[in-house]
Image (cartoon, rainbow, N blue to C red; front, side):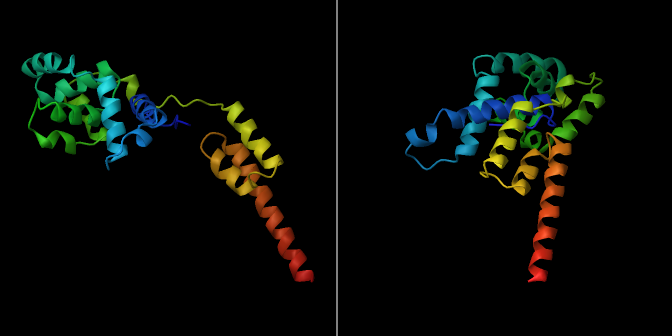
Length: 185
């Protein structure tokens, strides 16, 4: 499993918890036809925002600040995406306002400002600059011809653009040489 470090922290935390559902192997255990992606989302929401804690917190925050600000505060406390908090509030039947789940992450960030709340570091990506182990695994796969250079370039494009460009240039050079050889025949 690899997590995109260009995503905001709250999205990354939720994604890791979501992916943990898949790693637990429930897909093989549950015989019913269910939407496993939605189940993984619900699992992540339940882990990050337990049903035993959210209702009393929601009641107090909603009373004191209103629904939007309450969602923002809970999202910060749980380090969860705003949209996931809004869905969790509806799933726990704490609100009937379906309008809340229509608000996108970027719009929630704007609502922070409207509610005079400080920016949250959880809305920042803080990308990890080096994935040296991953890069070496990809490099080794290329050397063993388990992966071609174009595929390696695609896998490294976000985490090591320089290496990805090098693989892409080598791929292009190899294609040109191959075409020239074919023309000579």
